[in-house]
Amino acid sequence: MTADARRPARTPDGRYVIVNGRRWRVTDPDVPPDVAARLRSHLMAARRAVAAARRAQDAEAERTARTWVHTAKVALGERGTPWWDQQEAERRDRWSEGLAALDEGDTDRG
Image 1 (cartoon, rainbow, N blue to C red):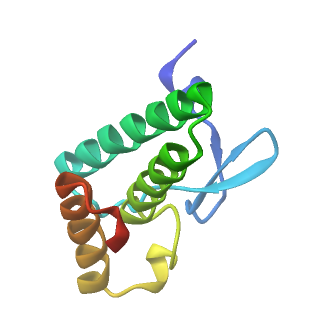
Image 2 (image 1 turned 180 degrees about the vertical axis):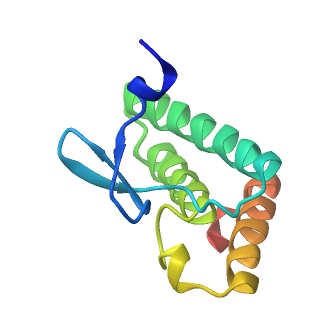
């Protein structure tokens, strides 16, 4: 199986992927690759933190981890105002501020 065969289908406009019949917004294609990689690293760490909090039945830790997930997804352009509706400067600010908040551990800004 080729790498392309494993990739989910995209809508004709390229803004969404289709997974099990559901549309999911794709990452903003203008996020620089190094920034996107760092944001995805934060996202995956946050998802692991959600799972750990759930296993521990720690509702407060789960809320905090879910806030981190949300902050990373907004910074990637997968949540919040659609990236195609934002000006270039707004898009740059979105991912820069999101990454700064995650790096600092201040997810209240996201």
